Length: 403
Image (cartoon, rainbow, N blue to C red; front, side, top):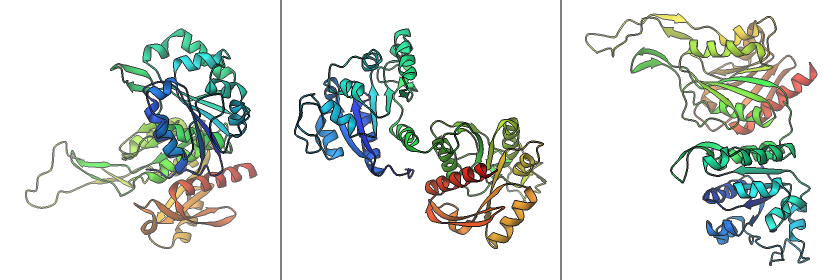
């Protein structure tokens, strides 16, 4: 799975309410712990009918809180005010899943168990991840409650759309744990790009020769997707134009799937003029086949004759707009990285080039990169592509602040 930014030293109170999606909370807890967060679990009584508290105790390493009266937990003093103590010790209160009943109760200020009183007594941010049947979600009463929660400053994650445990399909599924984790990380991430519209390209393009063959490269799209997530976590509105990859779409990012370079060019140009930042990470094929066959080419006497035409340079085209966005390019080179990257920076008239050596990055989960801008070069030591993306976004924010 992806490597997520650290939540080291962050204390999270994970509240689990009744519903079949409670089983997902166990995986969410595991992911939170994996990122370094300290997690205390509190459950409603109805939640214990779906998943045993012992499951969460084993995953969190500490007893699960169930009642307002004190339970044995060395981290919580036995003062009869566990609902207050829990919220005061937490940097974030996360309710996942949040049932329709629980959302209604907190929307109207009910406090009749440990979880609801902790919500009411909190002095930290609150995130809820709804989970319910589609008709319950669509019910006007639920929608009024959600609107009230948002007005009160509570962040609502989801729900998603898909097949539900009842057999119906529609909105109401709790977001997947990895997607909820992304939103949790975003809540702790400085909004370096708040209010910015970011447009990215990622992955490889595919130029068909016939229905089964084509021209492409070995780009996995991982760096582009990491950049999209990092920009999203930094508070930007992100649109990702992606060539074919095996990667899941980043949560909270508008993703547009394309195959050919001309398709990518078209989608980018539709949006470039209204974007603040354009980041060209995709490995776009330089050439396309002009005489592609509509049927599979057979081996019947030698290699076929393939005619090529040059594809448009998407980054250079965007940078040449009358009022271009802040443009960032990527340079994957096999040799003379500094020489080629600096030449690309000047020739395409962009603000930043992120350079690396293909033999050190392609197909890898980590890499070292060098940033080239008007101030010179800046080496970033080897790290996961997710961490590098976070560093690059910070550098972009600093350059923007200086303009």
